[in-house]
Length: 156
Image (cartoon, rainbow, N blue to C red; front, side, top):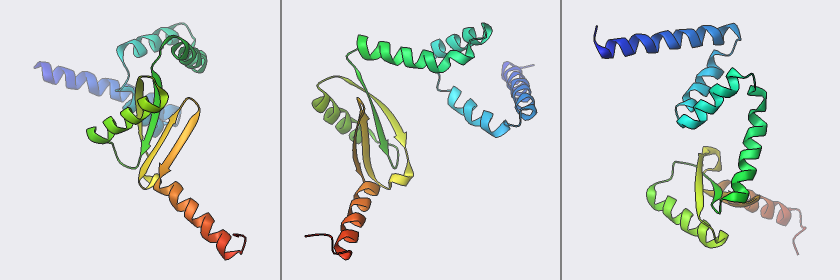
């Protein structure tokens, strides 16, 4: 049996075990979404989760996340900046956003990229509890409010 075939059989066995367990809990589709996110996890995250699971500490995931964030915020000068765009950013836009954020925050930044087609275009930047919304959706909302106030006669 070839190595590739062996890997395929192992992968199928894991997939079958996962789907059977997920079906018993009536969450096969939810588990698939989670599994697709898991491929992005680093080895240290997977190892920590495995140890937590082994010790019955999965209920601490939220608390660990908060403490980790607090530690990072106090011990690391890098600022986590969430950038939401309607389509994935290309390298040029990524570099412009990073430069803009570093200039405004006076710190190195780590970009967390999100895609949300509902913003239609533009960009939303969030860091240190503040939000800069330059999305097309926000601009259209502002225009809608302005037009509504003119129509109501409430604009001076």
